[in-house]
Length: 460
Image (cartoon, rainbow, N blue to C red):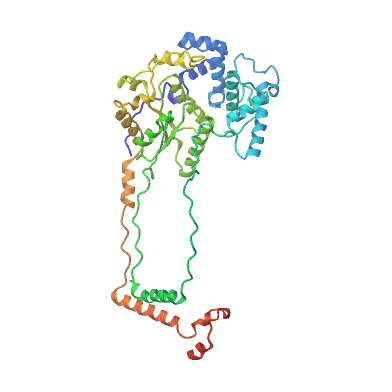
């Protein structure tokens, strides 16, 4: 078995599957504190600055996993009006019908953006940033089947893949510009004497052409690099612009590479989980033997994407797989003196990154993009790090045993000896001669005009 090399940690409390902030919030929730009290205690005990609304958002997300056992502590759980009368419930209710109508007419799923414009046109939502954000969040919760503290659906349930994937880089390779061709002239009717003479020559040669040797076998071919390997590996990376480089680095590793393009869409992650479930069903591999090696930016959003992906994979039914950040990590930034980037709020941004404060609290301003590893000075280091992370789960002994078993030449075919070959050729000659003795044309229907009474007389 391949030797296991420890990799960089995916973050604090990685074994729990929760980020440090989520774990602290859940601990305070289990201490029976209200959301307002949790906000205050986070600041006092752990120097984590989150307002009440942010705590509500975190607890709502945590509640979707029953393993977390989120309590209701001194909070009002009864809505001011029946849920099905609330604005956003009605929006999703109408969206469900609009998606069905669109699919019937176009025979394709609508994009998220198309449905957004549809509801704007119907004046159910506005084109404001706040409505766009709420609409996006509501559709995600509706597709994941989020429930409230009373175990009731927040919104009407939508199919996970009800939208076309706006993030897919689809290419329709149907463009053709080849030159037209003129019709060719029909050929002449072949002369029947030339036709039969050619066939007779071929038939006569069959006696000599017969060699009495069996058909040669084909050499064995080794299977894929991961054939019969007990572990499965994929590499995910954040950047679409780096995807060609990842393919080049891992060209001989024979693994699947995915570019999640930042905070991956729910459709993208749904399709990934479906493929992993099919893999488990097809091969019988255990989830704990599935490894996702992740490469992404190390900044407030980049670090948070790790937790976002792991959380969504679990919500979509993939539990127990290993998700490991290979790059970039704080340790790599320090060890290789990677160039840093500014994470301060930019003048053209309307609001600071919501993950900024927590990131700075734990890591300071030590942040950089994944692209920093692709400069000349660091590229070979990154290449080795990534390739080693993949090979950590590949057993060369298993592969070599498979090559030794299958990469072999076939046995020589059987062959008649000289006496057997002579007898076989005599038999062939007799069979050909007997096939064309007088009377053989009787095998054809009368309408062919080939039957000859004289043939029968001669045969008698």
